[in-house]
Image (cartoon, rainbow, N blue to C red; front, side, top):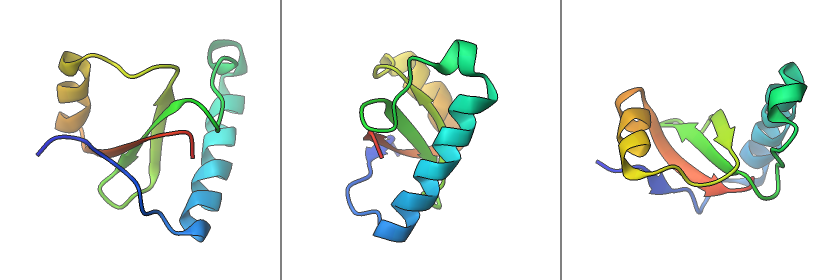
Length: 78
């Protein structure tokens, strides 16, 4: 199963994930200041919970590694 785009998150889940992503960015602000909740590539586990974010979509090798550690969905911004 490939990592699929999340298109149907409910508003409450989006708001919770937005808050978790802001905390993720703030936890290491010097390294993550380039991330933005509106434009970054965001990864989620199979429950649809925020896992991590990157500035741009990684290549297929990295996506395979992310899938191996439980990433199931992605989106552009939250």
